[in-house]
Length: 327
Picture 1 (tube, rainbow, N blue to C red):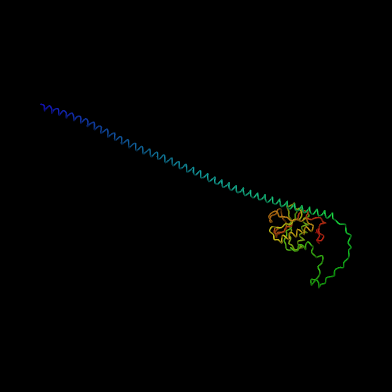
Picture 2 (cartoon, one colour):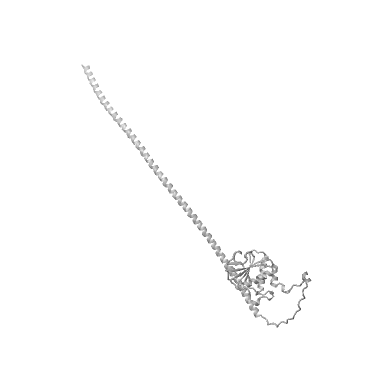
């Protein structure tokens, strides 16, 4: 009996264990299915999250690329604008430099013109002062000569001289005939013959009424002495008094000596002569010169400018000149 009961108890215990195992198996199956479903859901969620992450990253990268591209475009446009502004600034700076250069050149030219005008004014003042001094000296000499005037000499006794013997044909043919006193050169001409062949330009002021006659007289002296004088009428210039002898800078010593000889000769002949300097370039002159075209009025190395009051008082004219002052 004991064995049967034990066996029945064993069977009952076994049957209860199988039920439990089945329940646990069912539970485990369900848990496995739930776990599998949860795993699948997790994988799906992970995939969706990964896909969304990729999409978001792509959108972010696209947005960043678009922003960078717009920034590059804007920066390129800004750089182009800056370069254009720099180019315009350079052009304006170049224009300003050119304007400054032109202004400097004009200022330098104006300074040179002012210096030349001042030099001309100084030269004109020096010439005028020298002429005034010469006129004052001549007036003083006239007054002194008038104060020292001797008593009138008795009338000379004129003794008739026999006429000179006639010149025969043989003497004329042989050239031994004595020179006639009428053909003997005057002291003025004789003193200037040493410089025969010298070229001289005679400028006669148009506004001076007595200048043409004086110019003709001086030109006649020079021509008789073998010089090569040419006369021009100078219009548009005034304020020159007396006779002014000018010499070109850089002339040879012989020309300077000839000019000095002309100056002393004119003074000894009673002219208000003085030596001066040309106030500008030798080839430049104010006003107008009317006269020969060839050679030009600026080619001669010596110039004799004849202004107003070019001759002194009549009693100071050398009576030994052999040539009348009034022609």
